[in-house]
Amino acid sequence: MPDEQTGGAFAEEEAADTLSDLRALAADSAFEARTYLTTITDIASGANPAAALPLGLLALSQVLVMGARLGAIEDIVPEDRFEVDPGPDVELDPLRESLTNLLEGLDEYADVVDPVTEPELTTGSIANDLTVVASALAHGLRHHDEGRILEALWWWQFSYLSDWGERAASALRVLQALLAHVRLDADADAVSEAEFDALHP
Image (cartoon, rainbow, N blue to C red; front, side, top):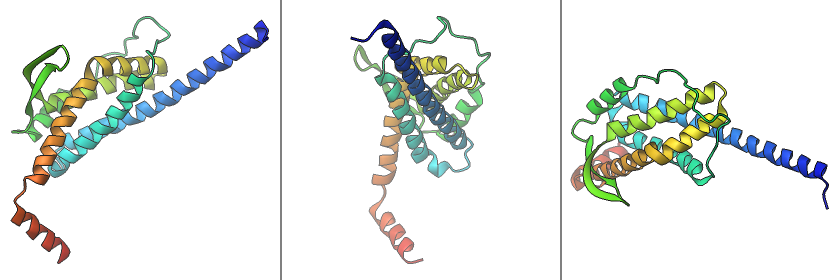
C-alpha cells in the first residue's frame, strides 16, 4: 500500500502531466486561431474573390476542430477567479465591412435562433459570423501571448460553447451550400468547354 509521500509524488506527477497536456493544447489552439485570423484577413482583402468560398470553408472547418477539442474536455478552470483585462479588443469593424462588401448578395441567410429550444426563423450574416469568430479567437490569443495559458483556454472553451462555435457552424453550412451551388449548378455545356480547354491548352 503506497505511503503518503508516494501518493503525494504521484499526484504531483499527474498534475504536471495535465498541465503539460494543457500547454500543448493551448499551443495547438493558438496556432489554429492565428491561421484562421490570417486566412479571414486575406479573404477580406478581396485580392482573390474567387477563392473566398473555398478558403472560408476550409478556415471554418479547421477552427471548428479546435473548438470541438475544447468542447470535448472537462471545463477548464483558470488560476484566477476573474478574467484579467487584456485591454481594449482589436477593432474588427473594418474586417466585417470588407467581408460584407465582398459577399454582397450572398451575405444574408436564413437561420434559426436555437435548433433545440427556439427553432424560430431569423436572419444570419456570413460576414458577421466570420467576424464574431475572429473576435473571440483574437481575445484568447491576447491572453495566450501574455503567458496566461489557462485563461486563454478557458476563454476559447467558454466562448466556443456560448457563441462562436454556433456562429462558425452556421456559417460553415452556408458556405458549403454556396460552394455546392457554384460547383453543381453550373451549365453543363460551359463545364464541358472548360474541361476541353483545360485538356487542350
